[in-house]
Length: 122
Length: 110
Image (cartoon, rainbow over the protein chains, first blue to last red):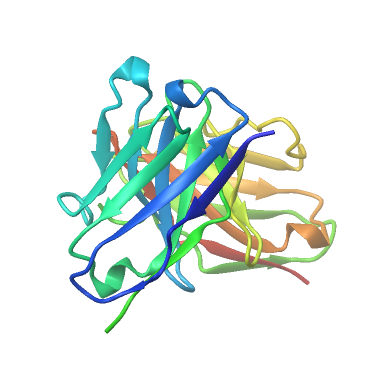
């Protein structure tokens, strides 16, 4: 069974930093394309970024609002995905979901974690 | 990257059909056949319902179908059931390894 469990969500002040983690199981993690998608309270979904699998050199892509502030990484020895969030803004307040894009090409968000809440407020 | 445009809400009675539209541009919906739809019940994570415009993952009822014409994709739910009441989001690949979602549509089963 595929499981994705996010952690690390917290209350942080504007300008601060936070690292989220996502522990994965039930699939071959090292080859997996993994994404972060966020959802502000009462709002819609927003794609944050993606990291490819080791066969594709683990390259990363980011949405414009987070580029240069967020860094997605992975530790294949721990089956864990991360997102380091710096220079946080109030508009980064959201539930952050970790997602495995299981289908070929990684174009779809097949398996989702339960999410972790990040609140950016003074 | 602007969000795809969806109606804020739609409704239908049990047994009826409803269609949710998702309008983008030639840079996203119109430019690629990588359109997907997600169902989200309150307090839950979204669930993939449609991919490749019209394909259903295993386990998704065939009451759910997808299509696309030009820059607009559509999700049709036939034979509405109470458990279909949820928020629905479309999503499209937007080129340069980026993705864009729609604003979401709240489906009410009357």
